[in-house]
Length: 311
Image (cartoon, rainbow, N blue to C red):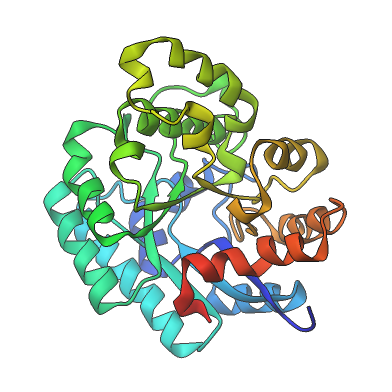
């Protein structure tokens, strides 16, 4: 496919007000580098141009909005993304953030983001204050996303507590929190209740490709089987997964044995992962032995099917 054509579905923004209020240390501690990235929209555009990325769907990463006015900061970040889209036609889309765990404010922001700002979907973190997305207190938000048939991109968060050996959350806790979030959505019946939601999970779904068969053993329990009447594997294979930091042969190989290319999306995790990781996503897919049709699905067509406004 000639020219820039890839659509990057995990591409983060760091508006100056966001960095100032959340703090560079709080952002940096989640990352392998230990430092908050130096970012501007122009940095994104230059990296995208170097790696054949036509459009990046931007979002706010962990730690979300641990500030005195999370609603105000969340709205500002969503407005910032909308202004980027307007200023750089065709180069950006957005997954709008929500100020969870504030449910009422989140319901209001869903309407504002999707109806007024024309966001392409909603970004949820895998957990909020240790509560996962199937928690009953989040049910009104999940039900509204179901009513709208929204695209919901789920990015991992840092769970409460100390991290193993002082390792940054991006190394272990992020993929594990994604895994917990998927299992929680499944076995609380939330996935079954929100079949119209089009879920995208970061980083190949964490450990889900490895643990899916183990989770499927829970079908022996009637109380859990009721949440996956078509089977655990079938329920998990309805989900979509991005390849950010996951395009190497071990991780991508496991993902493509677990699911099919029409459920996989290109992603870079830029700038929280540096530009070589973006190159790694491109190169890993190129070396994966995919057919041209399957490569096109992952790099572009799946994103357009889920988010047709990106065309």
